[in-house]
Figure 1 (tube, helix red, strand yellow):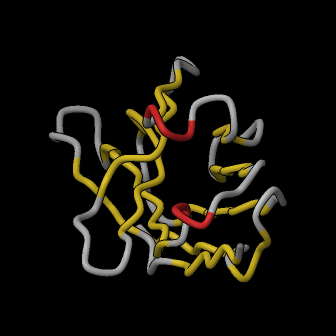
Figure 2 (cartoon, rainbow, N blue to C red):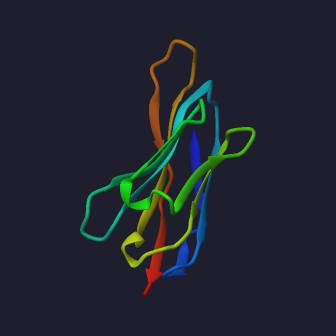
Length: 120
């Protein structure tokens, strides 16, 4: 299973960026997909998740600004980031919890990380 993230870069405060993460490989089912971030000197934190039933959850500081979604095939997860703030600067990692077979326990898979820098 491979996750390929893209869409990071330099944004301005108040602006927008969109992250994408394409999932490929042999997967039986996906429990949930999400985005985490790690700021310089900080620990990795959950930004947003979306379940197979399309339920979403967000970090309090991004609620109302970020939106997580998937494509119809549910093999790509997006993070639309609006009203960016300098404190959103971090490396963003996509995550998928997936099963490779019906009776197999789910595993976590991670993308390579994409840097988002927000200038003031």
